[in-house]
Image (cartoon, rainbow, N blue to C red):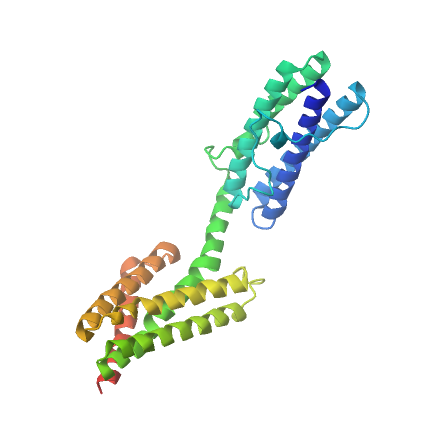
Length: 312
């Protein structure tokens, strides 16, 4: 590559980096202000680098800067553009930024070693040092660096949003599907002593409850005031978990033998209730013994109700 082409490629790289970091900042602004501020600063720094390179190109070569993209140049390792790679969350974006800075440093060192013009070579060497140091942001980009108080606060906020937007609607659905369908499934089973009939009732109850719970969750709260996230996502999660909770102890009734199917369904019920108790302990900070006792008591009452009605 000629000196103008190398300089044009450097300009293109800085432009792409600035746009990528600005996009990261925009997507994180509402929920991760500290990390968003980091990417705003990085975008501004990359823009300054781009402007400096443009001024140098105009001074040395005049004319229009040719468009040369790194992904079209053989022998240059380049991270995928920001519209292809979608890092998940602030840590994923910090990791992506670290890779981009490392790649930029390697590029400037190689470019500086091949440029014939001393002035351009000097600027590229300075930019290589700037990318390597990134004095104001390097420690924050590094995922292995000790977290700052602001990042600790962001991590805790992210955990709370995850619980509100994913765990809570999923847990509500799982509890409803696992517990509320016990009565109709076991009532049908003991009323008919026919596995197939119990399976049909269980499927109808599970799917009906899933649709009902999904719409109820989606329509109950738009998430704007409560911070519980997109209503239709919550509704989908709640509906699917409701269906999963009901189908779990329904599937055993595909076994032709009534008593065998009932025994397997009973084991599945215990596993479902144990899972609910574990989720409450893991994400809701409920004491494990208390969570297990409450869930098992509620499940047992509904189960006995269904058996008594079906046997009457």
